[in-house]
Image (cartoon, rainbow, N blue to C red; front, top):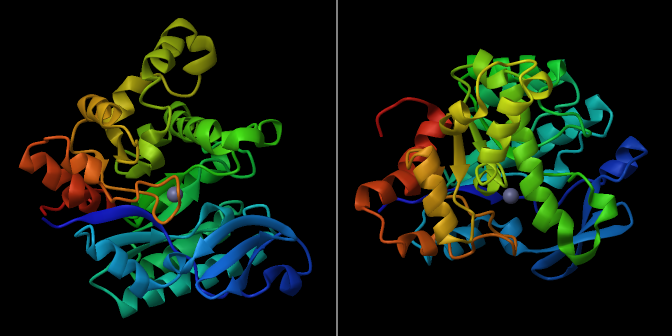
Length: 333
Ligand SMILES: [Zn+2]
């Protein structure tokens, strides 16, 4: 069976020293301290150790062959978004990352599909880069769950989503700069608790802000199976019903009505939860997505899904058809 992993991250092997170039800021740079490994540094602070499978397309293809998954959808690592930077500098960085991804797709068209990154903090520049990406053949973009702690319901972002719909570009929402991060550094809580909440924050903002209502053809996929969004939909809906004065101020439609508007990756690490989500949102909305190559990812590339005893037609949907529909729209695959 064909398999596409729609949630993976890829960086260039070398990054220019943007902090030096722009003269400010904690832009990520790489220190290749031993062969095959590099440290991602945020200014002088160690952020994360990465291995060659984070930058070497051939190494990745080899690792994926083991799991019979020929195609990876690649996007940058959220810490690279750099929405906090000056817009022109963020545009330059985004273009650098996007051109690198385009090169990987050009070199290995059978194995890679890329999602670009755009300077969300500047509406005009974001749309400019979105249009360039569309011209380069990118089917979509990855964006953060918040933009400098602004929610995706803010009016400044609407024209960007409108442009995504107009250009038929898919949107992948990935948690980053997690709320409460500074207050809960211990125990990896930003990743374990903050990330699922961030994704729900983004989903609720797109719903309550009326973005999905006003853009019926916008196709949005939520990382990590939507985080806490689907498991807490009862609470979200109840809040909408009991305090419409707080919740239903910009959109009168119940949040439950949008469950099937989103696509969701499969990275739950929990077959029971995935089965539940599949029941609630429909099996046409779940896409194999792993967060490879990071340790919190499903690094056996959907093996737990193969073991769930799902019908062949459902597996086919989850393993590639749903991803193609999300990326390219209502075509027959
Ligand atoms: Zn990810």
